[in-house]
Length: 160
Image 1 (tube, rainbow, N blue to C red):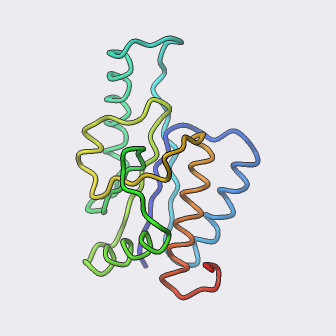
Image 2: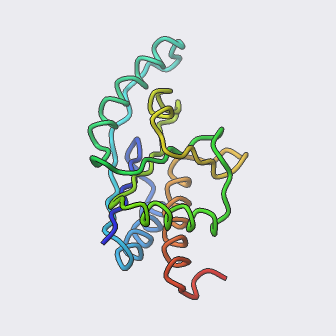
């Protein structure tokens, strides 16, 4: 069975986001081995300098690199990434699976983004929209789209 990991920086605290995320994690279990990893954001002062932000992103990147499954196809969620339809995302995952990869890993960075080195190592830089969303809502949206992509690949009626 194909493995999908979603790495999220920061812990989700709002019950309505947690409930929605849990529902999609449960649904994904019917299609793949799914793992949601919450890694802690590096603590920064209230008004951090650019150097402090870059240092924090670098420290987060160390933890992220360790969490990416070995040999996984890697996708970063970033505003400057490529916009894909749900069908295109499903096709991308199908191509990854057909290439012989046994796992995919998606990353939602922290509130200050992610280290440029992580973006550089990504197989795909993906944008969800030109709009800005709270990170916890983005998590639910990514989970729903991963579920939708798996449902499309399996011919489910979920995607209309």
